[in-house]
Length: 345
Image (cartoon, rainbow, N blue to C red; front, side):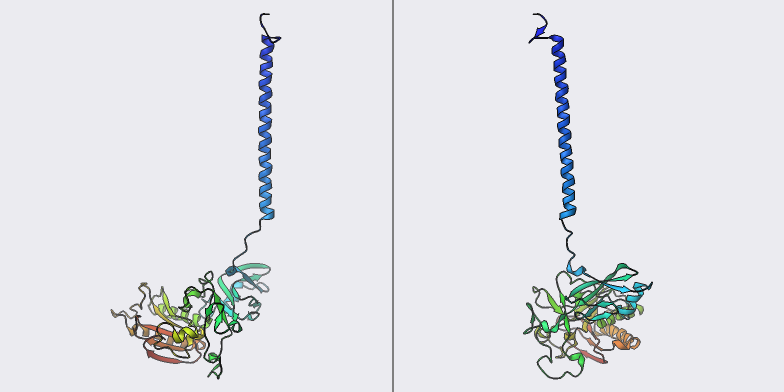
């Protein structure tokens, strides 16, 4: 029969075909919507899982925090300035044995380490820029000259005898220096790692002594040099803390005292090195570098001690010798001492 296909007229066939197309399109649209919805649900579940099940990474040890409560409306900044920033106002660390009170409301943690200090005023806590409290490793942790793998040796009166003053007795404890905290600032111009003993380069952690009074005196000396027309961009620490073992046997031992204050963390050998050539600068501008430039630093220290008698100590000037240029030894031993020498202070 003309005009009939499969029992359908040609008009009915066109209607059936268009209905089929519309049905397929509706099916595809519904399928795409369902898939999109499933993706949205999955994405929401993933985000929820991130929030619910993935903890924030722990803060590294150097950023652990101690909070000092300051009552009333007192300024946290002035509280800290008066307490522990030193006479220079530039100290950025304090040391104490575990559990010891450093200043009011600030106690060294029981776990030795380097902690950032924060102040709390009226229940608002804010970090103090670059100020650290160091809880010391007790001296009793040293066994047979070692703490862990690091070898320190024995202090002069550790095995017996009576020191001439308490300043020459055994230290209370040590700063534990790691590769992570070695760059911790101890003042405006210095960091922990500047004062490490120059030995056992691959052994970490290392242990050292460093008295805040020494850093305070160095900062005041820098300020005095600058006040008298000697800009200081880099005061280089040639030698800071020395373990007893290194003081007796390490490197060039010429000129080292058996009771060197370097072993007690309150002495350093320094020179001004603004040009970064590894040697003393021409501080007196006479066209050469010699012991007279070390004397410029001595003169600055004299003025610092006159203004701050509680920082009195030893000052020695050393000529160039044994592969190094002139330098100045500065310490805070507690009594006045002056000398000239060669070798290492």
